[in-house]
Image 1 (spheres, rainbow, N blue to C red):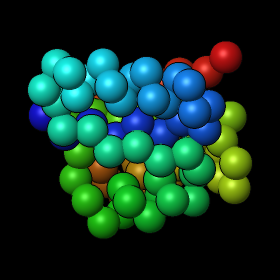
Image 2 (image 1 turned 90 degrees about the vertical axis):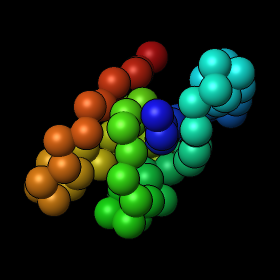
Image 3 (image 1 turned 180 degrees about the horizontal axis):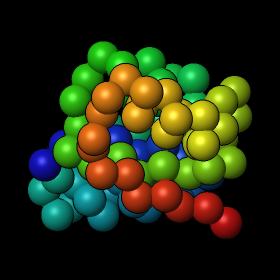
Image 4 (image 1 turned 60 degrees about the vertical axis):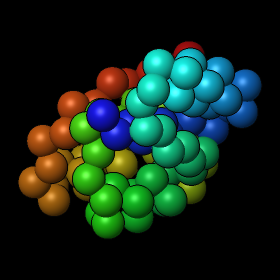
Length: 80
């Protein structure tokens, strides 16, 4: 399973990434919405873990663009 984590808080992003990799998932991580949008336009994932409060492009807009492209990938929304 390939997972994209989109989280700008380094401690949380690192913890999620380490835990999921330890469970033998393939994990990519980015900390801003613009980069997430570009990655999601170019690559397929089985799951996206998405923070809403992101720099450059917020999580709502990342999700809107993802769905506008027709992607049905499951998205788990995290926010503080």
